[in-house]
Amino acid sequence: MYTTLWCTWKARNDRIFKGTKRGDDWIFDDIVTTLFGWVKNRGKNLSCTWEDWKMDPCHSISSCNM
Image (tube, rainbow, N blue to C red; front, top):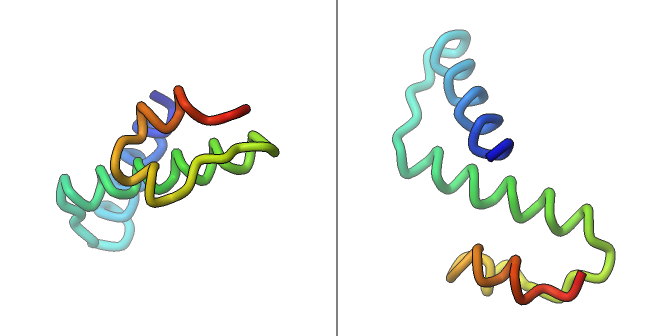
């Protein structure tokens, strides 16, 4: 949830302050990428890969060895 809020807020700020309009696909990809980075950096022993994460983030979270 926090990742969604964060990425939506960033897209909003880019639109207001930089004039950059982001599409829904771009925002969704930003959410998936940011969440992977946050999860990967918080868990020292995570075994999930970016390829697994892209295919199914929810399954990757549940199957990661944390």
